[in-house]
Image (tube, rainbow, N blue to C red; front, side, top):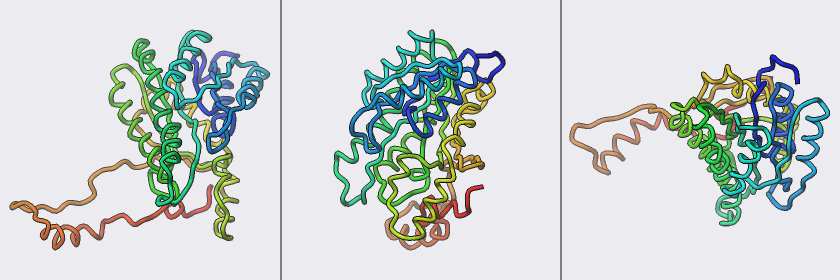
Length: 306
């Protein structure tokens, strides 16, 4: 590919890159000069089955456009497979510069009916998967003195949502994982950031439509295409992105947000120390005005996508 592109000379490993957001990131990173390992197990939105075709199709599309790409069909939930993905990038392209942890599944169910298997399956793909691939890349990044992690979180974890305790816990855990990587690996020139995407995808397509309000919400989501997420990921992976680490962004159609991180909101103090009765009589009433409501993502992002 021609010189002068943002990711010239870089190699990217993108998980869940056979469809949706991952596919568009793979194609845009390749168009910007990166060599790409296109990882996709090819399972269903709930994680069953496997199909090599989605990853192969993305590889073909990149190659047809003049780029370089190789497919990988491994499951991010397996630690050894994560190591094999990184080894493949190094063997086939001579190194690795960018890891995008995008692979995911859904097993939505109200919490009091959630099974252990539904919990484990989602945690294993999202949170453990992000750890597996990141840990495999970390040794290489440390040795070469640079590297970029882009992880995918969700407002289901950052804010809240119904029926997604497994997904929300995994996605909020990824935000903590990303911050820890950013802190631990800053001295090696490694960055780590999160993107919380608003985009229509296969997984979002599983949202049940129970009434007209839900139908209207889904129709708005359909207008937010996965391609809107890719520019931020490319920018974070570029040389200019080296100054950005430990942040959480959200992308909603043409809007990009910097999301907040937990900080103290308000405090009360007593020189004598607190008793349970004192907490009930003083602390709760004093802090109650600053309590967060049981809101969901839709309660915070109340306006139509711009």
